Length: 137
Ligand code: ZN
Image 1 (spheres, protein in one colour):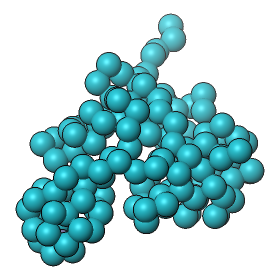
Image 2: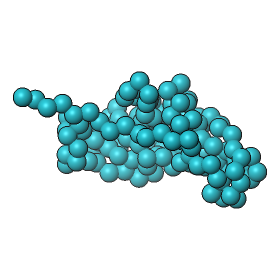
Image 3: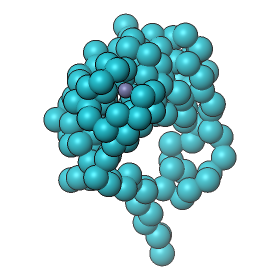
Image 4: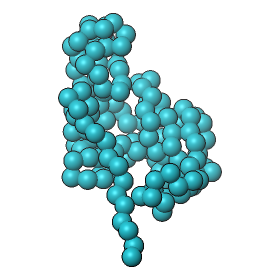
């Protein structure tokens, strides 16, 4: 009998829930500190730059480049078996935010450091939409 496996999904908490809710609305947003004005990510109630507690959620352009990446050839989780090989990358957005994500929409050996990418959204459950990145044409 075939056993089905579902992929793990993020666990949202009081700090990260707004991020995921914006993703569901197809918006990539990060926090901007109300005191020092710096953007920060991952979501946190305290600014890592000045330790201020107040922030607002600002919208990113969704464009960036591949800062670093690996190609996964091994099956680390059964739910990802059909996708091997796939790319796990750190994307640096135009605004300087670095995010862990996947590069999709091209062959893994086409991915290069510095390659321009833009965000695409993948609905993985009723609660979660993941921001992923594809090459900018
Ligand atoms: Zn700050």
